[in-house]
Length: 67
Length: 196
Image (cartoon, each protein chain N blue to C red):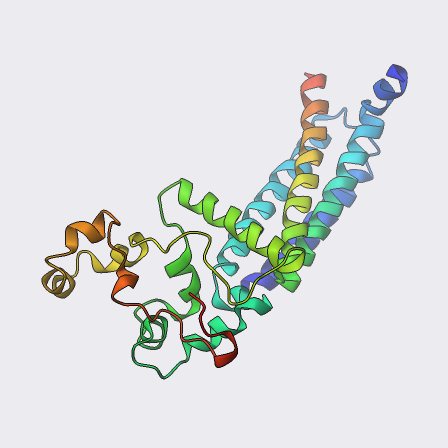
């Protein structure tokens, strides 16, 4: 299990995963932006922001590890 | 070009940059790629996210946003009431509050720093009630209407101070509600009458 986590935290997997999360986050926020419906925005705003934050975290982990 | 269209264009640019970054396949050893990765994964999405958040929050303050909940239908109609005693109709129709943001102006908590968060949390709870909970008609306020929102505009008005001289202290201290005398806030259609 530890090995699998260590493998996942390598830049070859972590960065594409972070990028994927950010793309999904951008898509979520765009849906909210496009519809402007309260029930849509209640879901898409926190979800989109959270996914983008996770992507940034992935980048930050990789960046500080490489220092 | 509207702000919404610009933000959608921003989303396309953000995704394109992310796709280019994805083509590195984790090989970020060169300085140029490291900088590109920072720009495409942090700076551009961060700036876009901030712009979307500011735009969405601004849009959420508009009357059109509030009235998307069906329980607000009667309250929207009350803005256009011909009743001269109706506080909201008088304020709305005579531009005493910005017409686009009428609901927010009178119902949001305008306390610096904490007010914004409280208003958003209350809005989230109201959205939950509308879609997943049970809204009892006529709608009742969570707590009595605070004078603060009235006094925000009226307190310093010369005419107001003159006519409310005797009660001013109690009004400011919220001991006497403005609605005790000005008791017709929303004039609702007959089916919803009795609401606050």
